[in-house]
Length: 150
Image (cartoon, rainbow, N blue to C red):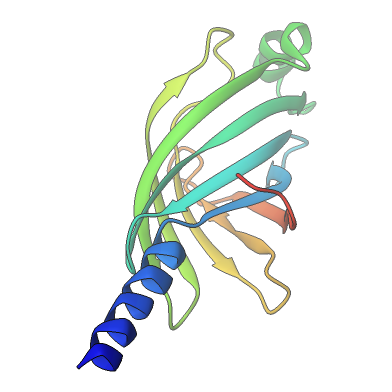
């Protein structure tokens, strides 16, 4: 009986550690057919085996040089930062995330909440597409930050 109880407790502790895990990625967001570049730090908190939440810390590094409105808006904001909060789901078998931005802290007006379809590759890095104003031309590429306690 003691072995069964110890086994259950060990399993529950391991499961709780896995679900409470926060993953950190650093990378860039770009948009096809533009020269936009935003850098990000992405923090994904696994609530349970399916549900996640977290945030992106964004930094604008390049406007779309092909768009006069983009350059007028972003040139004076280069280096500005914002935070976007999301909720979503994780599909362990396919290692896919579906994330939905729902709130932002953005005093410089550099971002809009977005939707994301992302995948973890065999190296533990993340990539995928973003809705980007209903175009799905946004691209995320990020490297896992390893060895850091988040």
